[in-house]
Length: 135
Image (cartoon, rainbow, N blue to C red; front, top):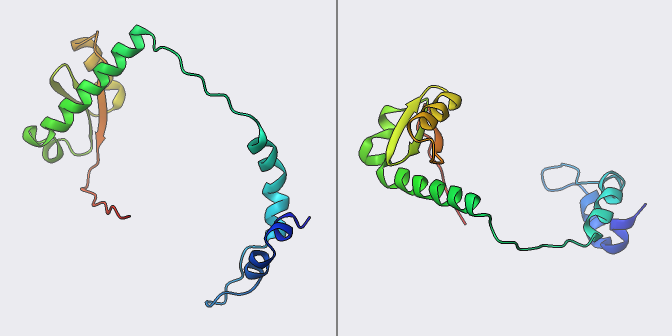
């Protein structure tokens, strides 16, 4: 089965050679045997995307979740969430911040205080993590 090397002969030869660090490249024959057969039939099936109206209850829940997320984003620094709630779960719901040790507890607390609202629940990591975003 030399499917890949038939379509990409130069690429196939390149990957069989050793690179500058002495590592062997990918054996495209084995890759074809392992992934070629199940991959192609799946990719050749026709996909139909349909657009429907969102049910009113679901639209209301999405709007509440968005509103609570935005409230959390705007007020987290002012409230001191990242300084005081490390290692715990927080829920923003109805303009309030609720804190608990487990996600089940914070969801139950949010459900008791605001049964009609969809809370935004988030875990605040114990340590501050630095993230690097690059293009």
